[in-house]
Length: 404
Image 1 (cartoon, helix red, strand yellow):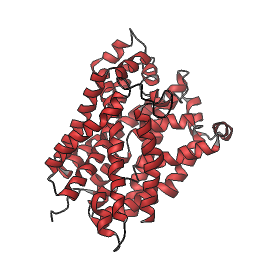
Image 2 (cartoon, helix red, strand yellow):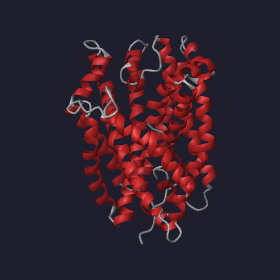
Image 3 (tube, rainbow, N blue to C red):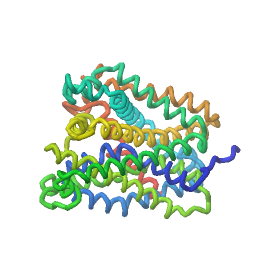
Image 4 (tube, rainbow, N blue to C red):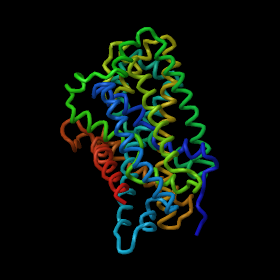
């Protein structure tokens, strides 16, 4: 049996594991969900769910991974008792990882495309002849652009994974995560130093029970619970793979706590960057997923030195998205290596083609297949995929790990 790969350092394990958790859930989804559900009141419930559900479930995933020294493809088969059917759970996890990447890679492509536009000055130049809404709509309506940047995102992430755990995943993710944290601190300081941030910070950091009640406490609580699962990437074996690389002398409780704390800090800081900026320019922070691509570019254009901050923002968003894609791709590669005995390079080649093909429905759902509205009028194929993953697979998968 091939010797299991290991992380080169404890910092590498923490940053790669946190990189899987830290992604668009923190800096794309968290601020607008927070805005939709009443600000600080939502944050308090979210933190509670992280403590009583997220942290223990993350420990369970790490424990299953380290105990089996395998990915979810074989971990339950190795650890289960005789005549048990827990090994069937692997198909749930494998399907969940692929389904997540069917739309997450597309959104990562969006981030990379906007980062390129910002760096090259095209984002600012285009704004002089069309609104940010039109820019975003034009991108979604162009299948060539959407496919190109989705494929670029997939190729970069799988290329990094092809280099191996230490030389590829660990080394690159460490650099990206350190740059991401640095960029976030710079952007957060810029946000709070402005004179107009007071109202936004009060909305974000001071609980307003009445505002949350208007949204409906059941909706707020459910949103907080499902986001706690989404942001930590628990329930589908995406984190257990890193437990399988973890040395026996590392305490699972402490390592899981480090990941939860780092993940939460990034989410809170992302809100400090985004929500006060919205209030400063009279924009409500509940614009949904379009907040990043329609609302914020408009905000940056009104700031002194806006092009610099806009460029830094979308670069940091690209790092956040790629860190998760790389981590989940590492899990997908491990499936093939554990199940079929494939080499890393063969698994990368096959998985890359498969993920590209599986990503096409979400990509085309915004243009050529826009007539398909599976969740009702105005919905997209991505909405269906996100609903299945976020509202079903993640909480049910987390329950499966805890029961095991």
